[in-house]
Image: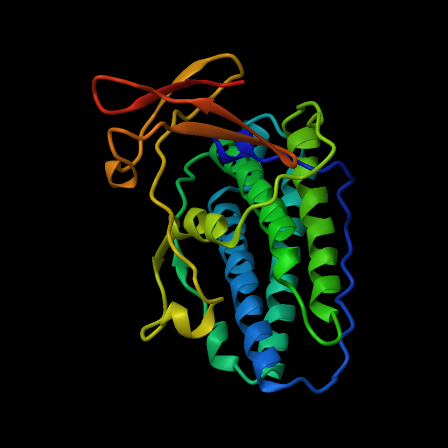
Amino acid sequence: MKLSSCLTLLAALLPFTLAAPTVSSARRDAASDDYNSRFLVYALSLEQLVFAFYDSSLSLLSADDFRAAGHPDYVRRGYEQIRKTYQDHSDYLINEISNLGDPDASGHCDYAFPVKSTEDFINMSEAMQALAVSAYAGALEHSHSDVSIYTTAFGEMLGLEARYATWISTAVKYQDLADMSFESPLKLNDTWTIAGGYVTSCPPGTVPDDIFPKGLNDWPILTVPDTVRPGESISISFPNTLYTAEDTLFAGFMTGMNTESYPLIGNADGSFSVTVP
């Protein structure tokens, strides 16, 4: 299933400027600094992942490639602006992490993305933006500090992520606006698991428990079809270590703040079937 099929998008216009948040130099105690640093490193890892996606893809695809695929010149220019925004976000976060006394925690990993054509890139950009929007929507509840500067900063970033997500789905892909009133937030482990699928290597000596929020875990991989449509019966699979033969299993479909659960039907090959609402 494309990630964008699971995550809702917020409606707004594509902006062309971003003002960096103004942050005070208020003193913070050691425990607060450690918590905030870990949270900022988590956010930085997401920003660096998405920047790497845009940077590597735009380096691969020229303006002529976009034209050949039927896209006007403003599409590539818009993606260049999005790339710049992610670089600005990363620079801001690196500066804040350094201010908290953890400059060594801001190193970046290497990534690989399955992009070979303009359409590959555009489809994946929709998924990447949906991931970013839902990641920040879910992460805001973990953002706290004595001066609440990071909650404000992340709210400002979330606004940009949502605008870009909607620009891609409407102005680039000519799709209708999502019929939603609320975003679908992701838990930290949800984002951690999805993002981890694109990481190929990290700086030597990187120990996630030392720099990221405590308690992060990779969820088991859920295998679903590439395309999922409402009303279809689909086959899904996941490691059988997660359940026993006596368990009754359900699939949950998130829509905004609501989750609808539907029973899974076992297949002879060990997979399960469920009808998409």
